[in-house]
Amino acid sequence: MPIFTHHHVDLFYEIKGNPDSSETVLFLNGVMASTSSWANQLPPFEAQGFRIVLHDFRGQLKSSKPKGPYTFALHAQEVIALMDHLKIAKAHLIGTSYGGEVALRLAIDYPSRVQTLSVIDSVSELDDTLRNTVGQWKDAAATQHGETFFNRMMPSIYSPGFIAKNGEMLSQRAKAMNAIGPDYFDGQITLYETFLNDVTMTAELPKITCPTLILCGEQDTLKPLKFSALMAKSIPHAEYLTIPDCGHVAIFEKPHELNSALLGFILKHNVRLLK
Image (cartoon, rainbow, N blue to C red; front, side, top):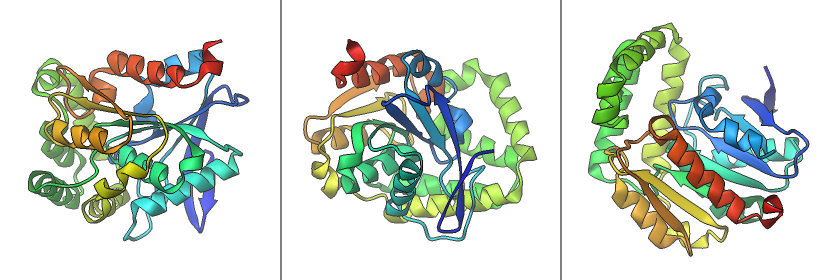
């Protein structure tokens, strides 16, 4: 299992696709996710010959879970350290939810290291509804019971239509969560606290200079359209797309539509790849 150690914190990472490519895509996880969550996105990027780097943030499933507090700036520093370790000068960033917020921080703090930025179902600030929902997630994680945790958070991340069509699959996923150890839930609580305390960055979004794509599921009730519209308005020349009949987890609910948007955007902004 490849591990990169930075300041005594072990970060799990994986490299997919063409390891010798000069074009790298970094996929940045949602808060409850791991590198395997991007399985639906990998094939089209592998087919185009990209080097693909995935990793778990500190606090996530396969990485160290030191005590908090964390910050998005700290996550961004660790991504840059991993890029340096892998000798990646510049990368295309694709982040969903929490990973999208880390990607925003990276583009603000390290503009020379970001080639393009794609942000899926993310926010740059909070409202009371989002704050209360994530507070409820903290309570669910504190039970340290996987099935209870999954079932409590499920209605806020999947659209009603997806839940209706995939009830059996989601039930099996809930049961599988029972095998996860207590350190996972401890890490989740710290990540939720990081989000609640540090996600505010709307005022800094005009500093982002790279080509940027903002995407959001139209039925995302956790981080609804208003947040993506605000980011698209605040980032110079950002492009903004919504995905119909889709909740918060677009990478699962609408992978084909999402992949077309992501890959098309990156290819459009890299003439060399189109030759």
